[in-house]
Length: 207
Image (cartoon, rainbow, N blue to C red; front, side):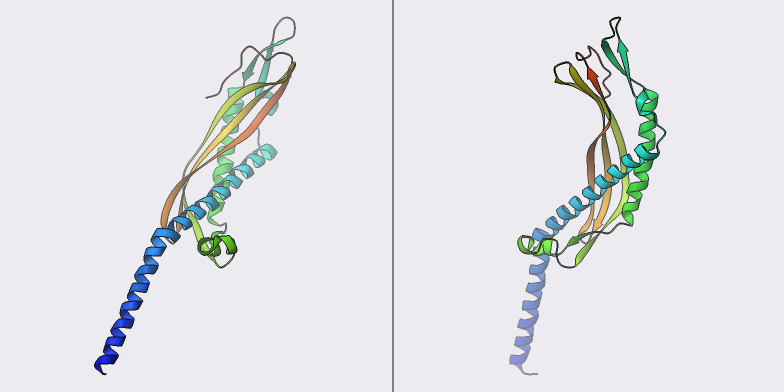
């Protein structure tokens, strides 16, 4: 092999090496952060849907008596003076929903969560297109449900009292660029009572 051919081969190898290094740098600086962000959005959406399914299942099959969650206390004139909450029903509701939520989140391992390559390389023109990069949920790190109560006036002689649930879910997921953790927060209305008359002077706040 002539000296000139050896120089050309070395130059070609050097160009290939530079191209490979450039692609790795591009992957780390641009594509990897985008992949992590899009994958996280996909996982958050899937977890939010799981929360919705768990709440729906509880409403359909749960043992909680929603008519007992909110109690009304009236004064001698029949006016609603205070609202109370049946904490036993709240505890049962929380237990049932979290059990169903764990079941729904476990199904995420079998769901197809992916990122279309077009959304990474040319999102303006090819978002949602191209072959899919798989995203796998590895672990459910934590689930929690916090209940809180609020009351507000709806107008003259009318108010609404609501019990809402804030769900917080911690997940770990895997993409081709590594493992990442994320927290999903979702607020859901559990029960509400429409009241006629003045806003009650007191009500139970669930912190």
